[in-house]
Length: 254
Ligand SMILES: NC(=O)c1ccc[n+]([C@@H]2O[C@H](COP(=O)([O-])OP(=O)(O)OC[C@H]3O[C@@H](n4cnc5c(N)ncnc54)[C@H](OP(=O)(O)O)[C@@H]3O)[C@@H](O)[C@H]2O)c1
Image (tube, rainbow, N blue to C red; front, top):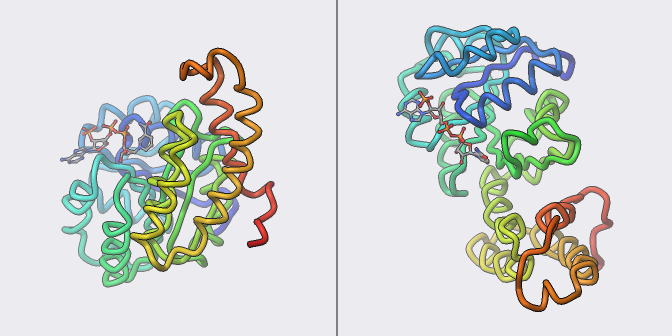
């Protein structure tokens, strides 16, 4: 049932982002089941070929990979806590935004129910889901990621597993917010602050270094009157996101 070839996938929470996720899976040819509290939000997806489950349990049991994208972790628990039994043997890929602590707690919660857990951070907007340059971070079960990597990669060409610690994806999300928000200078202190909070994180210095090198190139590109006055120049956000070509830049020698 698992695999990297058109394996079935479930999306719980087709709001703005969840609809984009489910549409990307459909475009990739994956049989896609969706469930939402407000079922009418899945109408377009059903027209594109998705199956609308009438209950969360019906959605979860449609396949091994269950992608969750809800407003908060509390909402996720409201929906999934009552589903005794059905999570066992599934892979829960939770793309709901949250903290590292919530990710670790949810990984333990999923494990008690016999499910493998991946926590994810989406560094993209709905319109860019599925694009080759879109970045998504996953952390948690490496074997679950490996089994479903091709499916998960439908959501963004720069889908990356950043470590077995389920809290790492949320950590990367927080650390990179400065870049996505348009102030590259904020990244390194954010990385350091995040690192101080997360003693076990080994990967952030490398990310900071890689983004830092791109940032230097960005500075050259942006040098000019607009930048000196601190104004955002056209296209800056695109260039700022560009540094996230994590797999292309060699790791630094410390
Ligand atoms: N949108 C983005 O650009 C973006 C980017 C990165 C990450 N994210 C993350 O993706 C997640 C979803 O964001 P979104 O933009 O898709 O938000 P959204 O459009 O508001 O969708 C929220 C989803 O949560 C469901 N929900 C909320 N409260 C609920 C409740 N009490 N019971 C059952 N279902 C409930 C909604 O169901 P109903 O439709 O029934 O309300 C909907 O499916 C968030 O964690 C967000 O931080 C979003």
